[in-house]
Length: 284
Image 1 (cartoon, helix red, strand yellow):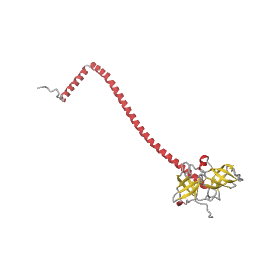
Image 2: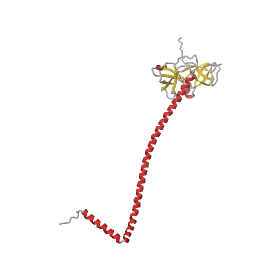
Image 3: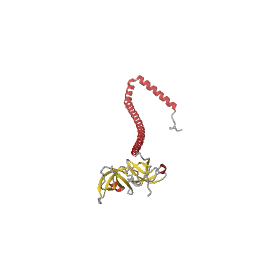
Image 4: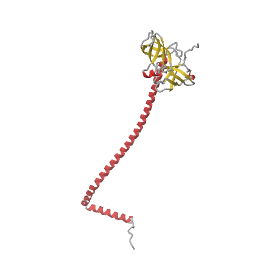
């Protein structure tokens, strides 16, 4: 019968062998301390570096875990700060918009005080026909608000245009710079009558309108204020159009022409005042 090499050793016998081995080592170390000292010295030479290495490795692992934890915490704080910055930027944008709107409302209030004799309503521009210049545009007030055709429209410090179409809740405005626009005006203290002709080309190139049909002997000068005339057929009296910047004699030697710089800014119109009182018309 062959011996089975693969048969496992019984744990009981193994435990007995280890027990007697430990007893022998204890007895040996008790009766031969010098020999065990050498063994401890050799073990110290081998084990101590291993202990130091294990300790260093454990410290490195601990520091790495701390760095990882700090990095994770920093990322979370960074994300929170980004959210806070975004919220602050949104709040700042909202405050700037509110300040802009407040400034525009103050401007309209000041404009309203300049012409206390007329009933007015505020309106906002919501569409423009052309790009870059507000020669024709739409406002968000109409007949339901008392805005009808021929109502004068103001902006900045004076005349902007006139309502040419009106519907229930919106209206179309034609500015005085439009080529089809003509305003009868008065110049300076003398009240010299003139015709102010719209010209988008002149506004784009040099920023002025022309006042024509001025009497050659009229006492006008640069810097004179130009207002709507009391004989204008569609514009109420006394609304500032602009100021005279230059005067030249016409070739017929009977009249002269003045360049007028408007007080309204026709490149950026947001809020306007509409005069609800319309000029009285005469049926001839």
